[in-house]
Image (cartoon, rainbow, N blue to C red; front, side, top):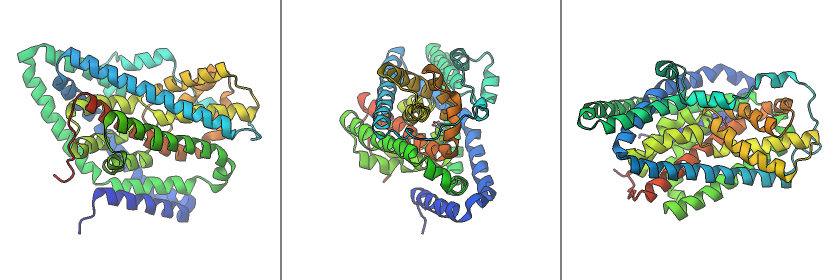
Length: 402
Ligand code: ASP
């Protein structure tokens, strides 16, 4: 009997947790399987983003349609991120996980966490050399160039048709490779989960338990209440049915802690199972994976407040509003790779004048929280894709049976 990929992934997550628990730090030895899997995923991200974005823009067609879709997408990203940060802030003010926590005086651990500056973020979008941008995994640059390319292909009319067809075929081919890589998901998931569980010491979890609990409670409220509500009201789609379809992508996000590495699967689930058109997925998802990170923004707000509480630094309302603004921006700037949120957290801390060395306190449990926030990030992108597809008048028909 053939076990479905969904079920295989679920088994892999559970087996990974058990193996990690039993093996402890020895789980390090099976990490290479997960690393190979992530390398394979990374290998396909850039060509896949390029092919799917160019095809997407060409199929959206006129600038007017694209303008409307972009506006809706941006609005969704912004509103959901701010909602997520607000939930995080309310919880951290109620639970106060940092009060009474022994603060660090060690500056050394913070030195590695230099946040990117605003200009360097801007430079990241506009590449001076497109090939170098591709080679260095500059996803935002690749998106920017692909958008231009898509526009240009549409605007040259007849002459652009052959290039459009080429990209369309290339896109199909990339999806085929993705499909092959996906079959290895259970092995990768097993190894990565076992490694994290095995190497995160139980002491760290005990010490930072209340902080973790606050982040997790916030992520749960956002993913189980806020987003499903938006999905039902604006997307007219049953959240239960939706998680059944999206389950593999969310589990993959959880185990890889990378929205970018999950992207091929997110696209696959939404197109092949939910039935969203390529036109929408190819625009909303690569962009969402890169800049829409509800889980990361929520986590950064809680982490910043936790540090403030641990150091006994009072955060007034204006400070907290500044946290909402900067955590939203920092989540946009965070790369869709493991641990990125921890680095852009420095932007938030700097903005409100909190000590950067506070980051060192959070390192021990960051990977587990990273896995959880990445799952929420991908879930947020997916809900948004359905909402925007519905607003664009798409009739979503379940494709699973087919
Ligand atoms: N790992 C997250 C992601 O890929 C970003 C983060 O570190 O919060 O979505």
